[in-house]
Length: 202
Image 1 (cartoon, one colour):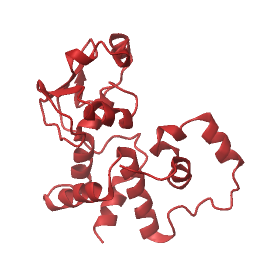
Image 2: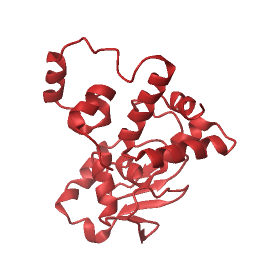
Image 3: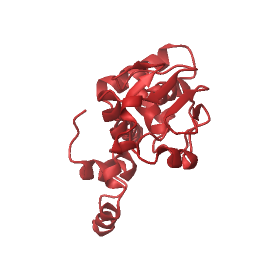
């Protein structure tokens, strides 16, 4: 997914949407910036707030507008809690699961890792970042890839890795199992999923 200048987007949506903005350099630049535009991000009124939240989520997961809209509409059409449905789809993406398991430090790196063929799902290589994992699926780094410099110290990192309750990471840090269903309780996410559903319900 192509995006514009990341610093500019972070100034509009918040530093959490890109890892590049989560640095002291960006924080210092923000601190020196004029305050006159503060509070005007995303436009005024309910629509502006809804649009802002949608964009935060879209950039957080690295998705195109079309992909994200499809997830939202499918969540609303399936007769369940739309917020929970949207979060389940977003969190169940293979690139997000790779990130959540701590195989890499960012979702962007996770997308590259999947695209380059380093990941197996139930023993089969899957190179589609948007692939949706299911309950009891096993997600692992390929044996041939584990010797890469990318994964040095995986066992040590696994002991410190905090994974969501719906994922279980192996002791060596190279494999994880989907043991539950992701929900809407990922509190560290920088957006409000309920407001996003309101945006697509208009």
